[in-house]
Length: 89
Image (cartoon, rainbow, N blue to C red; front, side, top):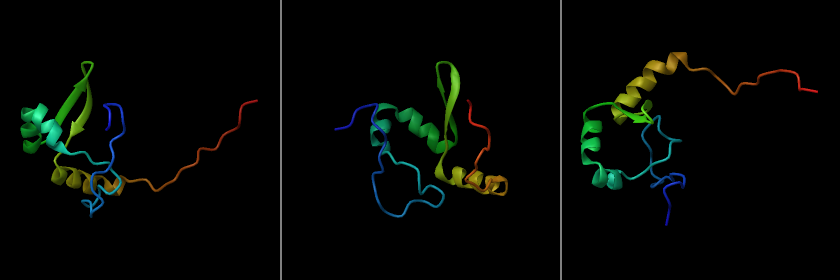
């Protein structure tokens, strides 16, 4: 049994959608039961979730996420990066 503060674990080992390979997965069934209007809005397009009165998260449909990822690809930085500096003391 998992609690509300437990990390989200992948729910299936199959072939994930391209570009989403390393992201955790959560079944929408629980969310849909509790917040059906939220899920309906997400199907229509991006939804901004607020926390403590401030924009905190954006939920995107997968096809829109993939389009955004393709647009961002030319700006992707190759890493890993090392920031060189002096150790204090």
